[in-house]
Image (cartoon, rainbow, N blue to C red; front, side, top):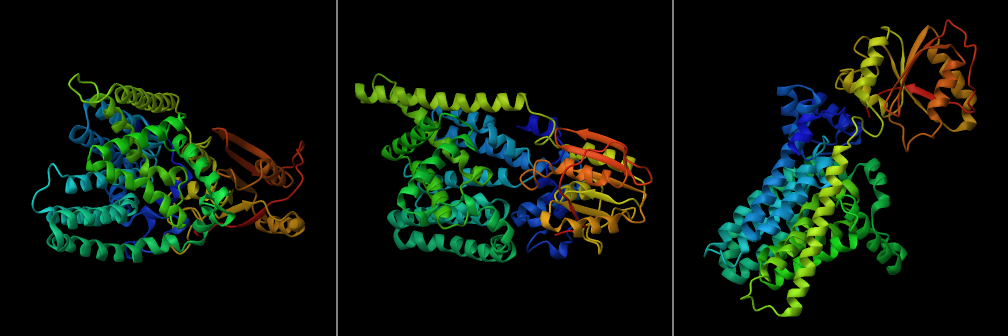
Length: 520
């Protein structure tokens, strides 16, 4: 993963640009609270990322170092878990899946906090198993529990995965403290619980509440929650489909039935053999389902990445079951040995499929993000740009222009102008019954300018398929296109000269709206 992350610096994707604009331009006095551009991130992670950018600069490699570091830490945690609780085969299976999982690696290389979420959701169940392990339990189990709560308190500031797994794990730990040490153990652990609660309260005010209160984010993810209001049958169909989809993305395997069966078999085997880490890792997907049904966190693609390494643990334990049944002195019967053999083969097949898909994906990894190369596009645009000429771009294309154009969003202009004073405008697809009004507005905006530059950046799922042709057609009515360049499949840069007349124009029905770009 380190080789992927540091050896190839792809241009930033729009989500990465938007979080980095917060990191770069947001003043320290506003470090907490709702982030600009409808973004959210754990506050501790955000502060560390800001430190990386301030110290090492704005290059893609430096900016992505923190997510890659947490991805590497996830692999190290997987190795520790395998060596401490598993056979060599189980350890290899777990490490291989964490090192090559298609989406685990993908989001490790993206400048978001998802790799940190995955790390903490893998580490905290392991530390919980260390607390309650009956074969390694000291008299002071409450002291170990207190240490765990302190780790959980710190982890929630760095990765949401730590927050998501804590309630169920905390209840499990408190139950074991009561079982093994009575009230004495519970009282000893209480200080750690108190610290976590204070930490959570501060975190909720500073970060979590603004994210939960964000109307855009709530509406954006509303489709991904369970359709509980539609009845039991519909909900069960949704759940079955979720098992299939989450195994593929972000689980990284097409063998979805085998994936979930080996996970369930591995967890069941661990619990049956009184391996406490079976209980701790069983709580992770259970926590994910509870959060989804409570409409707090959906189990959708990248938002589900946090529990993927924990699912890999169950598959690896399934491989352990096979190894444990091999010795001739084993008391396991023939039928049980046959079942263990099948389980071991299934676990190895799943891990091999995960590794194959991941390695194939990254050996063929394109150097653009979904057909966009904002870095090259904006460099070309600014090189061809004349100071004072307006720049027209899509709503999310503004993020690329602000980041790669070094536009400070913290100032009074808030992204309405480039550093040379050139105005920046957004173009969108409006209600087509209002075309006369928008045609007049476009004419008024361009009046007094002899040239204009256009960057048609990210617009998928936002504008119609022919939106790029429509924009170029509308501007061609007012002048001649004197420059054009494409980067990737989607990025288009064009320059129009309004002192020249277009001789051959492609007419596209419709109109575009225009408004001054501004940080939102």
